Image 1 (cartoon, rainbow, N blue to C red):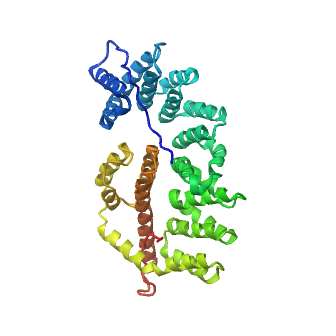
Image 2 (image 1 turned 45 degrees about the horizontal axis):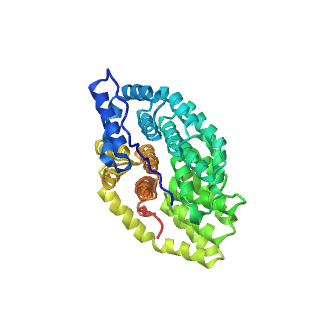
Length: 391
């Protein structure tokens, strides 16, 4: 699949005067990155990002001044706008847009759009939508919609419907990036597409909802679509999605038993029965997770900040899960969206680690609620320990 990477320039940055020590140090590191180009050590980029975070306004002001030089090479322009994006200064949007409009290099133009998405805000969103409307190239349209997804731009959702039409076997990663970054804002839109006439649209919508966004509110619409869906492969996909969107194991068991009893397709029945056969394992897994739980706001925040800053590359997911509660779900959703900003398929594994925490926390909460509801009379219903469904 496609990977996205920032290519740094090779030429030195223009020297500026009257800078603070911190700002001068950051610009010095940017100069070093410019001179080493694609061979630059990853830690150098991290150090630049840390430096910009400490004094974003000063760095942005200096970089905007540097952009005024009409003799800059495409490599210099590329690194300047990259760094400006990290500064997240709204005042830098107009200068970046000017570079984008006069730029002849695909690298420079791409870095401009990425910087705008990183800065965010209505003005940046408007410029990205304009760029989307101005191109018919499929790859470039995907790149821009990927950035609009990062911005969680609801205005981009109608155009993003074209991403749902791609072949799920070949381009499955495109909807994951666009709608995965969009997060909860994409849920209402996708729910309207699970019964679309187009097979690819249905498949991609079901996949993104049930395996990636996993909103509990999708469970009932997916159950309804299961009985309306004519293709066995998509009915199986819906069952896999219900395992992740239904937090109550008792409800999962009831629906899957109904499927096993009524469905006419052998492969669908086989999937449903396998889930039913794994119920005890799911209960045991959930009980083991519950025993490990040590909720701690301080520990959770420590791991969360480290994981978020590194886009999921640094930090301990197991510790994060043990310290978390169901109330931490909004932050966990933000983390998984941040992880996708790595823009490579290896990020999917870390995204799903976060989803696993979310699913287990929901199931624990559902289990506890069931226990409370059935304490009187005793032993009438044994409270079910919840587990993560699937094979």
